[in-house]
Structures are given as C-alpha cells and as structure tokens.
Image (cartoon, rainbow, N blue to C red):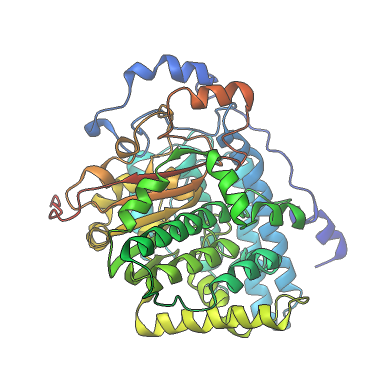
Length: 505
C-alpha cells in the first residue's frame, strides 16, 4: 500500500464530526418536552419493549443529550482510534496471509465507519458462528426494523456498533479474538502507579485475626474498611477509556486518588447514597457469595480485586464470582484476556519503572494470593453471552433465565459502572427521584431477584434514585453535571431473594 494511500486513509486524519441528514426524523426534542409528557409515563409493563422503554428513550437525534454527542462524535473517534490500532499491528506483521487477512478486517472497519457517519439503517449481524447472532437478529427484526443509528434508542445503537466491530474480526481467519482496545487498557493501568501501590502496600499483608477486640469492635472496624473500599471501587471507575480519551496522566492520578481524606470529601458527591445501608447489609453476610458484574479493565478492575480480596479475608464471602464480557465491549470493559493480564502482570510484570522493591513485592504478594483464590475456586471469572447483547437487564429474566437463576443464588450482585447502570434502568428519561427498585423493574420485582447494588459515577443522561430538587438545582448551577464524572450514586435493591423464580414457557 502506497504512502499516499496511507495518508488518505481515515485513520490518518482526525475523525470528523458527523453531519447527518435528519430530515426524516421526528422534530427536535428539548428536556422541557420530556418533562411536559411525564404524566404519560411510566408505560405499563405490557407496553414496554426495547424500542419503548418505561419512560422515553434517549436517541441520537436528541441534540440536548449526551446520546447525540456520543453517536455523532465519540463513536467515530473511538472507531478511528481502533483503526489506528489495527494499522500498528499490521505494521509489525511479516506473514503475507495474516497481513491480507488483517487488511480485510480494516476494510470491514471502514465500512462500519461509513455506516456510522452516514447514519445507515441497522442491518442484521452476519452469521460469524457466534452463539449470540440469533438473539441479536431477533431483536433487530422484532423492534428495530428500519431504524438507523440516530433514531434507534441510544443504548441499543451503541451496543450494536460494538457488535458490528466484533464482526469485523470474527469473520477473519487469523484475527477472530483481536482486541483493538487491549493496548489502551494496559497502558492506562501502567500509568496508575501511585494509586496501585497505595492500595497494594495497605492490603498485601493478610488480614490478621484480632482476638483481643470484641465482636462489636470488629464489626465496626470491618464496616469502616468496607465503606472505604466501596468508595475506592466507586471512584476507580473514573478511569473509563471511552469517556476520557484525551486525559493527561496528571488528570488520571487526580481521579484515582485513594487517600481516606479524599474519600471523605467525595461522599458528599454521592447523590443517591445507600452506601451505609449497603454496608449494614453486607455486615450480615457470613461465608456467602457476592457477584461483581464488572465494568472497566485496568485500574478499576484492580480496585475490584482488592475489594473482593478483603471480602474473602474478612469472612464475608467464601466465593466471589466476576462477570466479564466475551468480546471487546465499550472500549474498556473487562474480557478474560484483561483478567488474565492483570493477574499475571501483578505477579510477573515490570510495568512501573520507578517502583521501589517494597512496592513491587507488595504487588507480587497480592497477585500470588489472587491466583491462589482462582485455583481454589474462591474466585471465578465467567462471561455469559447475555452481557454483550442489545437487551437491557429488564430482559435478563426472560432472555437469559439460566443467568437469572444463577444470580438469584447470590447474596449480593454488585453492578459496576455507567453502562451497567444504564442497562439496569433501561437508559430512559425517568424522573430523577424515581426509586431504584422501580427503575430496575424485574431485577427488583421478580421472585428470586437477588439483592442488587449499583456503584456508578454518573457519566450519561439517565439518573435515578436521588432526592427531589437535587438534580434540578444542579441543572441550574452545573449544566454538565450528568456527564462530568464528578457525581455518583450507590443504590441498593433488596430484591426477593429466597423466593423461587417463575419462568414463562
């Protein structure tokens, strides 16, 4: 390929802002329009479907929303960076057959970029042999026939783009499992040395039995540690590569500060705050099971592992199940490759050039202990296909009854991050003070629904579970508060654990 051709390639240019022909779409909506129609909602359960959430969906043509910025600017930018990554890999290859195969992947990526920038209709997923094709195409045919990237609900359109990205490689011979985001995920963790070592040095030593303190004092101490670790996990997901594309290293370190003083200051930014209610509940669990539905790889996953390590050592759990993704998803979501990489990097890696021997040893100690948990079955990584579909978690019970049954056996399911929160709440324009139980629908109300906690720094439009008046005040004082990552929610649903799930045949 000539240098001239490389220069004209989309990856050699800054991604352009998409200019779309919106003449056939409904008229523009403003937030005030949504509020005026609020009396019509929520829709009754029989009228709810992926194209008709309980409250109005956010769609790409809603220019006031983050959906518009995502579909028009962020996704083309992310895809442009993905193409850059593939060219880097191609430039290191020497085998012609593998190179030609990868060039064909690039052509498919270019086609996807054209569809995205041209606001094309959502076509069916090509059968690449994966088990999720039928589920995707059933949903497209039933609910989104004739829809395009901008007038389909934002959540579905964005998920569809990542499944199409997967298709670019799954149709190849040699590159089926290629992850265009892997380099970025590794790099972000390797630039988090200050926070990584602050945690490793505090938690490397096993928790010692304290026979000299009363049960009451131990409970209070455990609760304080739990509260701190929960906040570390909450704010750890500030490192979201899809949202923080151009952050400096200093910005990352600022967001990842894990000092106790910082955490005390940030609790006031938890707008919907069930943190202490969650702590009280977790203190009642003894030798139980807690599930994490993971969000971001890298530093956030590391925080999750520190958190889960403490849950095992404190006697709260004897098993922790981690639910990740089967395919590269929303840039920084955890895959099995990311899971294996971080465990092995802790044990064997040399990622931090200026680290002291004591710092490196503390990280190795953690890594060895975590790999031992995995060998003993105390930790399990699993990746159900449902997590990488266009369905929200309102449909988990009906579309993945095996997964619902499995989660129903857990003492607590912790959903991490913004995307999981969007899927929990159907990513729709629910009033800000909508109770969390109502917002997550069947995952709170169905028989057998487990206790569910959502740890989420707010980075998109949907917000529920906050006191009346708080959001309205922020709308006036900080117009960008819903996408800044400055605020968060920690929300808890008690579920209906212990009841036998009921499934419709």
